[in-house]
Image (cartoon, rainbow, N blue to C red; front, side, top):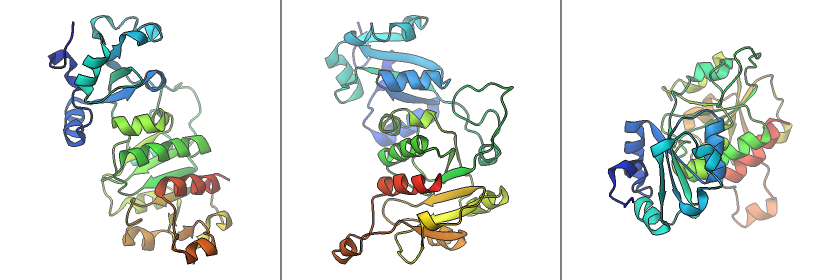
Amino acid sequence: MFNASDPRLADYANLRDVELRKSLEAEHGLFIAEGEKVIRRAVAAGYPVRSVLLTRRWADPLADLLDGLGDRVYVVDDDVMEGIAGFPVHRGALAAMERRELPSVDEILRGAPHAPAGPQDEDSPVRPPRRVLVLEDLVDHGNVGAIFRCAAALGVEAVVLSPRCADPLYRRSVKVSMGAVFAIPYARMTNWYEGLAELRTAGFQTLALTPDQSATPMDEVDMGERAALLLGSEGDGLSSRWLHEADEPVCIPMSAAAMGMGVDSLNVVAAAAIACHSLVR
């Protein structure tokens, strides 16, 4: 029998304590996948399983995945699960997964064989990405997960994160993305100040999304062979440096009537979905 203080379950403790979880997961090189679909997608993408914590009703649906994990499968009652995690786990299953070393931005942009998320045939041709999303300082994990889901669904081929951007493998990011964080390769910049220079060196046209309606509408951009769409933080948008350094400011045209009533922008997830659709047109 297990209880909330069992040291074997330390990977799953206090999942709502964001700061504690960020330090714990970084220290131990792990992340948490929640729910059957997300767990299966993480496994399919090649992330090793450290252990699985689940309630009894999920033992049969996950039996094929649990086979071979031996004593790394922890089956508990619902109240014990809630006591460990700190909230009701409605999807009934959590898996502690091993992180993998992130590729560099250069490797992502070159389409290096080990850069994409998930296993890849070493003999398959490497196709460098043509359409890339770049996130500057988005701090909300749910927004990052939702944007990854939009990017993957609409055909964006890679994501680049600024150094201060939220972690795509944090539990809420993974959950909101429904596992899309495993479906699209991504990398994190080590140098924000020179970040756009690295994109330009790789041949990318940089498009800075702004609510400024004097910018070029996304659907009218003369898109180059390789294009990177820049999205800024939830509150302030893109930094002045990236706005001025980008090749072209772009916007999503807003209703004049709505703007007259003070509705002058979209939230970052809605903006990302619309702009990604135009990016891959």
